Length: 100
Image: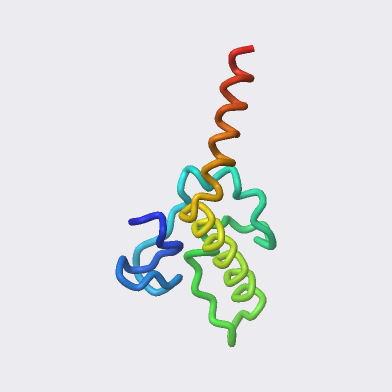
């Protein structure tokens, strides 16, 4: 599944929560996982893959929507090239620190 598909969506629609495949957090996104707000202590992947009905559980549905939107934002920033420089700088700093 392409990194541009932010959720468990089918390869053709790209909409979160519309298919049977489960979204897994890509390796490059794991450093940003602690920065994703309002998870309620839940795992980010569980929230992205969740399908809470707002009529049944409005708080959980709201949390899922917020987390999905943050994941989509990270994917779009990476695809636009804005996160590449940040990731590259972090790897460079880590490599320099390891040499010391």
